[in-house]
Length: 321
Image (cartoon, rainbow, N blue to C red; front, side, top):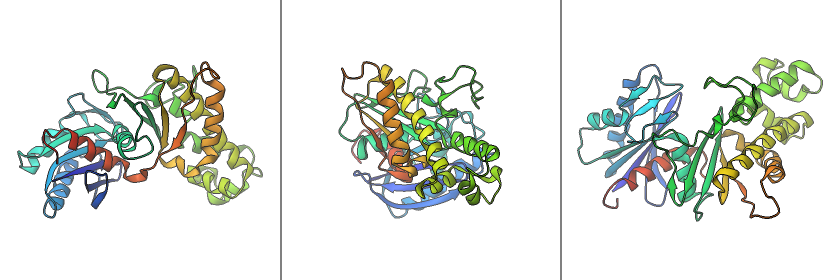
């Protein structure tokens, strides 16, 4: 039998059949209606039913942005979907009308991190910290081969560590959170600010944004940096330094063997990772007297959520699928 991984995004739901080696055998997609949670339940069940017509499915892992409860059945809260203590797992089970299928609900960063730990850049380590850097900063922590979920399922929200007292406002209600400085949104904000301040210096980035600072997005900065634009390179380096400085703080608590960095900004590669490594070394506690964990690019790409969700669901089944 196989496991199905479900990755719920803001605009689409990606669903795939995954084998025990982490290979996706086939995928389907469904649109997302964030304002209508019931439609998401139905879309997941419909996609799983479609895939089950061709593959023997015994477990379904559902990954979503938000706080998954410790019972791995409810979405306690989600910022972009109308979930409030929402029984996502129960609803999908009921719609599938199959008592023999296990459904597991997981935070999307945890799912991506587990994929990297089992099949990707973190494979073979005991303790790993995964950063998923896209619009925000998600994270997953694995200690001695176990995902750290905390008492209530709220652990590993590293993006909301306070890095700058009274700093940039964050959607969580606090100020100065790490994701306000180490995320795609932060990169976009700083690029737009630079373009509004000095159009000449930002000419290459502005050209990619149709000449309007308000239309600049993070990928424009990456594209300009890869072409050698000095401002774009500097903006990515600043982002990398924030990543590295935060990793040093995490090391003081977790002492991981490896940091794995994924998400959209990793398209910039060493333009971000090298500054991150330099800042990490600079701020690491007891540097020179301890092993220095590497900061690596993630391997699994956009499929990490599907693969990780399926792997976690597979592990919840008493018998090997």
